[in-house]
Length: 86
Image (cartoon, rainbow, N blue to C red; front, side):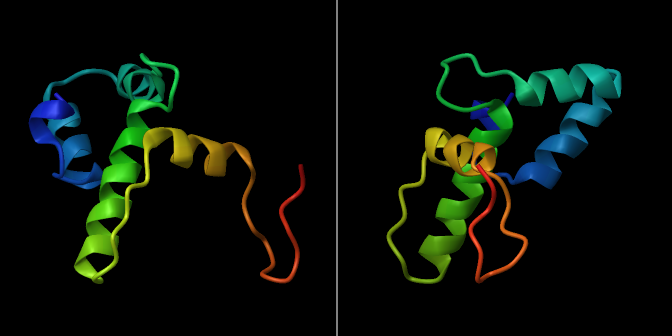
């Protein structure tokens, strides 16, 4: 499903997953699956979206699902002048 719709964006893919009638818990489990150990399906989608955005802004970007996973697990920035905990 994801590969067939690569570049469609998270919202579009979510709409298609919801249209299957699968329970939300199954959709969430699918998106959190990490079949290759290098980032979840959701991380793969976010990496593609980030790369598309950067290319649209004229920047060459090759962010991978592993990069997104590393950033996600590193925590969120609450303040710009302080690194996230961890």
